[in-house]
Image 1 (cartoon, rainbow, N blue to C red):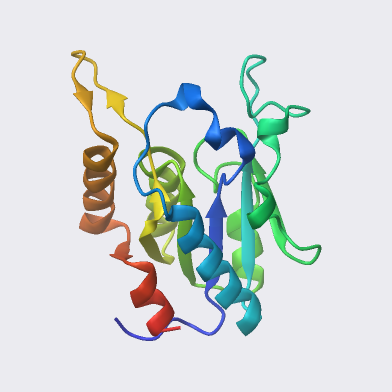
Image 2: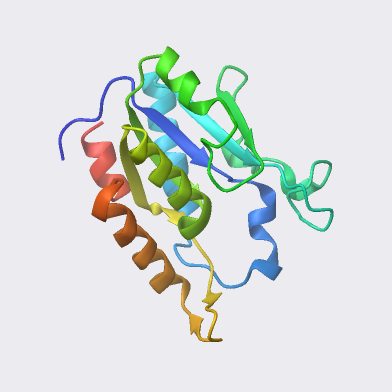
Length: 186
């Protein structure tokens, strides 16, 4: 892996308290938050740009609805005052948020994406980023997802859903690495 750009942005997606809601089911990558913290600490130490993305649900029943504790950032990953926060209403962090403009105004071309859910907000944001011409890197072990039932009723393990999502991204949209590889080229 070539060195990470000195102004590469760390994009932390939807690391909100609601992700611990038991109704979401069994997840993979139990150390994902630790990996995210490692990257966050490295980015802070190097004074590189950090973007925290928060999902703001329009659904009254959602744990991500404003005013609910689940909507708040996880304590260990809470943004500092000078770190950029993007609020989104759909999985894609580029859709109607101004994120693309914010990155272009700062001449940021490389994104390191972490967070949740791998096959939802992470994948849709990485796909858009790649389609928009950004150099997108996804930290595989700093993302996680949940078991998922497909349309035929088959239950897929979170590990399989995660692996397939990352494989989809690696085809055309992003490069996929482990946190240790990213930190070593940091």
